[in-house]
Image (cartoon, rainbow, N blue to C red; front, top):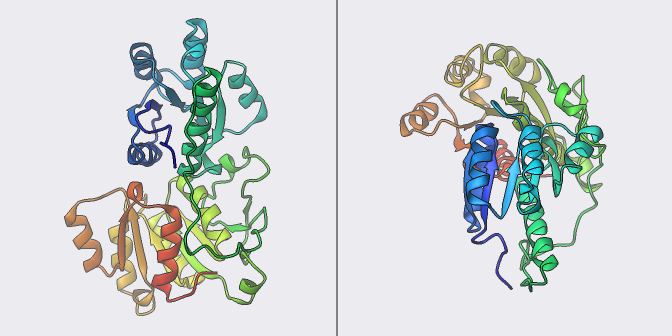
Length: 327
């Protein structure tokens, strides 16, 4: 296997979303890339001028100077001719995609419709294409080698899984996603499962207490495709009543949420004879040992940092906590 073209690549990330930025930085660092992150377009543009990186990952909606303005300046100064750009944006409107592509962007990714590994794959594709265009050889590299214990592939999940959503569902960003994305249903409905065999299994009911729109949409893809029936609530004060009505098999809980924080939610759950028996997975950006000890003292069964945890692993752990076999 050849060398990963991302190893040693100099990459600039312009992204003001802390969660997403940390995930991408960790992913790229893990494969050996050198990455610098900036929170606004003005600082990022200055770094691009100074460094001439191998690749720029660019958000559109940023403070001080947005992504469109960064691209316009790069086009005017002919920086876009030497520095490839991949846009990572919340919007998937064709007119907006066309607008940035005309400014010389190499690729465009919609935030709610990708995984971090897909960003790495697209980044590799851009760098490989540029290297080949220069007439330089490119080592063969497979970032996803087949497992030694590979099993026959199962039938694909339906292309439009149903997601249940309560309390300010994230329909606004979802409306602009391309057709392969996940629509949000307004009522609780059984989620689709991955195979005919799995259709005999009852869906795993997951109460997701989380207010981050991006993370909720990413979870929607993972949970529904894995045979789960998710219900979302973005306010800690509403979590108790919904849990009593929904009767979840397992709960995924953020600590930093409006209304009542995650610690308060755990205390509330512990006061109820039924809810104290439901396993809680705390999934948060908070990372101190004090926070960890506190959530376990309040009855949580698992604690993971968002930026250090793959969402597929989250789904696997939810099934384990519920004592269920993954569909």
